[in-house]
Amino acid sequence: MQEYGIGVISCAPQQIASYCDKNVFAPLVAETPEKLIADQDNDTIRLVVIDQPSNPAWDNDFYSDVKNHFSPQGIPIVIMVDEDISLQSKIDTIEAGFSDIIQIGDSIDSISTRFVSEIYHQVADSELKLNIQQAQSAAMSAMKESSNLGQNIQFLLKIQGCDDLSQLGLVFFQTIEEYGLHCSLQLRSEFGTHNMTNNGMQRTLESELLDKLKDHGRYYDFGQRTVVNYGSISLLIRNMPEDEILYGLVKDNTFTLLQGLDAKVHALDEHIQLENEKQALEQLSCSVAEVMKDIEGEFQGVMLKIVDVVENMAENIESNIPLLLLNEEQEKFVLNTVGGCVQKSNQVFSEGLHIDKHFEGLISGIEETLQNAKKISQVKDIEREEHKLQAVAGSDIELF
Image (cartoon, rainbow, N blue to C red; front, top):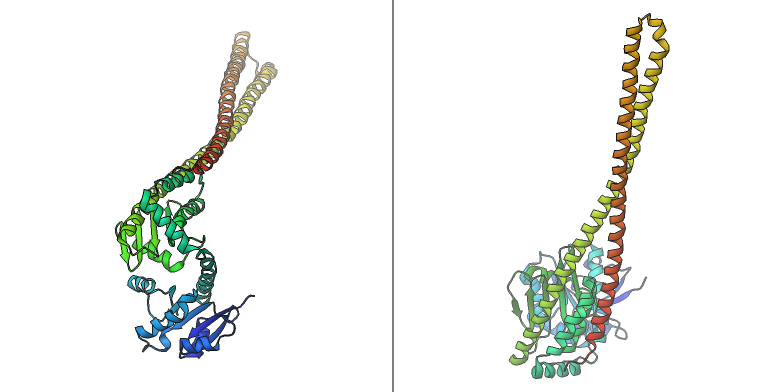
């Protein structure tokens, strides 16, 4: 198993085992950030953990010192605490520039997962940030000149070809990266919630924050960050521009994109619901057809048994009439009565055959309906794929 090098700033090294799995991580422990940097070997630290309970006396200057040593290198910083984490604590953590805040009482597997997640984010974000300043400058200039109407139209064309929330999020981030913005996105469908960032993965703390702030108004600003809410969509922008004009342009353009996302999420929900209802109806129709076939077979069997019983009874009576010592009139009456019963039972059997034909017609109609439904579904799938290809082709047109 791969071991990740992490730096732990702690005054109680013996407590590290309670939250750091040494099968996954190779911790380097120091009491100060300066000593941690001096002790590391060839820049092996991928994550810095601050063990807050080991020294409650650490003040804001200490945390600023830690950030000044490691944030410029892109190394994520996680704070470990021994108390319940409130919504305000999460907001303060993100606003202060730290990557995550974790309670020591959580399971070691959960803590390890969040540590590894931050390391993966650091690797992915390093690749995304290579040319971010140049891309941001170009994108902001484009927004200032035309409000980036063409980019928004292309986005609305592209999302028509999306079949699920993952595809929808990827198309959104392809568009938002043109502005050089770093974001976390939350899509809330009737069938589940999907969280993701520019690199395709989710940030646990930011996802929790979006879930808490989804009902806190259209915009929620804190520091250089802004949360935008619209319908089933919430977006956290981590690097809002300081310029007021650009700040307003970012809000206007991202809001337009969120409107398109919300409409598409509802469309996907309706599509899934219709598909589920169609499948349920097809299953019900198949079940009805099978039951009708069973009823048809049983009905024929019952009719045959009735005819057999009546004919056997008639034969027994006719063969035993001489033993009854009846006169001619009585014998004639009995024979006429038995003959009438046989004749009426044959009539009932004929009527049953007529009803059986109705059963056959009903079963054939159900089967034909199911076949037509399948054909229509196949045609719809083909049309949807053609529409998707047209949307992708149309999105490549230079509008401005």
